[in-house]
Every structure is written in structure tokens, then in C-alpha cells.
Length: 162
Image 1 (spheres, rainbow, N blue to C red):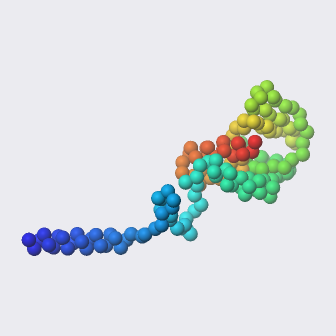
Image 2 (tube, rainbow, N blue to C red):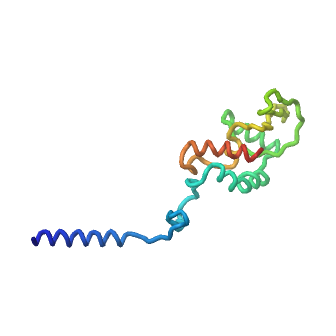
Image 3 (cartoon, rainbow, N blue to C red):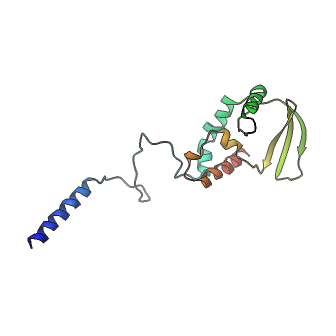
């Protein structure tokens, strides 16, 4: 009998210790806990859809960055030479001559420019392909929950661009 009382006391002591490790938090309107932001946590897009990320960051990560950091033709050529065969996405602001258009596919129209003797193809839409906007915006794979969310951000940005 004494042994049972000792075990009961031990269990009650453990339960009390476990409860002291708990924190009471408020609940939002959906019954989910409202957790205070961790000041040391890195920015996370875990609970946002790619469309929400694109809409929330379009001005700051794309428009403002493009206006502030757009390369001219000379700077673009230096980047192309430095990167070699490795493609790199950057924002550019150029004056050039239009040398061709491709409207054979009404959903993926393209404009060809000549820049420093090299052809440069610009997608006009309404369907745009690729990761150029996302990559030029400085997003990294590590910023996202998984590869799918990272890839979907490209599509969301391409839709915002059109």
C-alpha cells in the first residue's frame, strides 16, 4: 500500500512539473493559437500560399528592386561575361531595337531585341514561363517549406507581371 502511495506522489509531482512547462496563449477566431513572433526567427513563408507571397512582396521585392538595381546594357554584358555558361537572372533597363516578333502562339508571344549584337528574347504573355522574376528578386530555396512552394512562386510572379 505504501508503494502505491509513493508512485501516486511521484506521478503527481511529474504532472505538476509538466504543467509548469506549459504556456497559456490566446486563440484567434478560428480557435488556433496566437503565438508571439520570435524576434530571432528568420522570415518565413510557411503559412502563405505562393499567390499571397507574390502579392505581398510584388512591390518591395520586384518593382522597387527593379527600379533601384536594374542593370544597363554595359553592366548586363559584364554580368553575362562573369557568369559564363551559368544563367543568371537580373533586372535590366535597356534601350534597344526590336528585330522580330513571334506571335505564332497567341498565348506565348515574344519580342526579339538586339542588344550589343546579341539577340534578347522578351516574353509578352499572356502566358509567361520561367523563374526569371523570382530569381532576380533574390528568393532562395531555403526561404520556403519545400520545392513545390518555391516553384509555384515563379508562376504566381509571372501572373502578377501580366
